Length: 226
Image 1 (cartoon, rainbow, N blue to C red):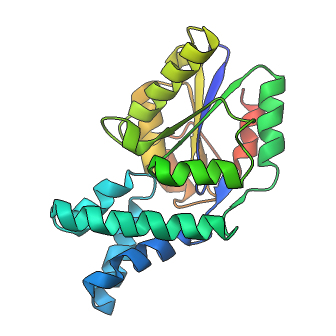
Image 2: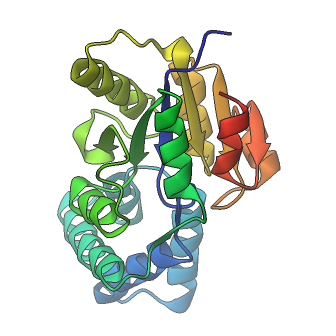
């Protein structure tokens, strides 16, 4: 296996503790549509099943293809989630900043990706103090296709290579995430290490079944793999 030179990491559920914030913001976003309790429960189950995917795609499905309704719901979601982040309710998992520092000490680049749009990602980076610790960040709104497509991984590699004047290839990249979509994206990208972490949305069995090469309770395990 080639030497790992760059890692691409998910945010909520992998490097940051979501603790139900996505679901809370989603339910706030859907309140104006007046769903019944049964409908809201069904929608919430879909949100949980599709964790890691681009949020506008999720809302488009829930709004049965109504682009305007999906856009309005997504805007409410963005407002709600950024408010929760601003309140300090999103925390990094213990040791993540030190984990970033150790990767940098080893000369390994760090990229983060998310199913959130940039309007949410930037406040997360700011509030968690990651600005000087990571090399690249890519939001799902900035690529043609969100997860499970590998577009965000490829875009991260492209940005890192451009910034550093390097030619890092997918076979020199490790990916970590907590969702089936993360695993599928890593598999499609052809990276050699796909770490599934059980600190977020999906189980070890689900992560293995969708492409994880390793499974761990924490993203910090990546230090033993690269």
